[in-house]
Image (tube, rainbow, N blue to C red):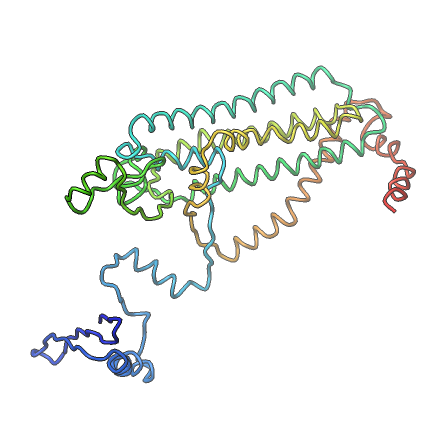
Length: 387
């Protein structure tokens, strides 16, 4: 059925009367024909209770997988809910996503190799700087051994280490979400294991940096002039980056060289920087805590400083990875994030201060330091100041 602005419509039909089935078409006024068609087809079967859209396939062009996706949209599974994992807009997400969008036919070999070298270089520099900070802080801790035993700063040690541990646990959650994204990302093996450099768009007209130019539809003199002047561009559809061309080999590379080193560096930084904060003087402990917090954000600084706005926008608008979660997984996540993780953070802060002070003298251990550091005059002074 095809409608026109003047109110008339063409209706193509096929009669089903046994062996004498035939096709035809009717040209009539739209407001008269359309209600009659609906009344004799959809509305009649719906009124009689014979309309069962669950068992019908309306688009014969759908494949089996596309049909299942469409059925899930119309008839979602009651037992599960669709959740998404978004590619992070940082240096780690850029390393995973951009090589899958590069297309040597569109971007060219120069841009392809420069982008690959730049991405690997910045990731290596990020991990190298963080590892250098960790080793240097560990050396400072060995030189300042015994400074954590100073009396009067046990409560400040607890608070500062708790703040730092909270920040590290936030980074660890980002690491686990990143690893979960890589594990759940579907793998495309139909075109081989190596998809880097061929792009992720199905039309082959989009790269990570450039888009293809199309030829003019006519060969007139005006179109030829526009082509020579490179002013003629076809209208490009909005292209979204995706992980549709992810392969098992690239997923393994990202897990080994990005996800696992990131988790290991976070754990090392938690252990080393906590000792560094506890060994600082009371005057500089707060400043040292803030200074230690930025070490895990070095990659974010580099990404925002040395990445174009176009690439940043493409990363922010990337298609997420969808998966189905059941009630058991949601309940486990609820208790883990809201209750278990805060208890672990507080317990780890207390255990860290207790361990660092366990090497001190009998009057400078953890419990003795807490009793000697308690001073109600400080609390009264803060209350008077705030009031």
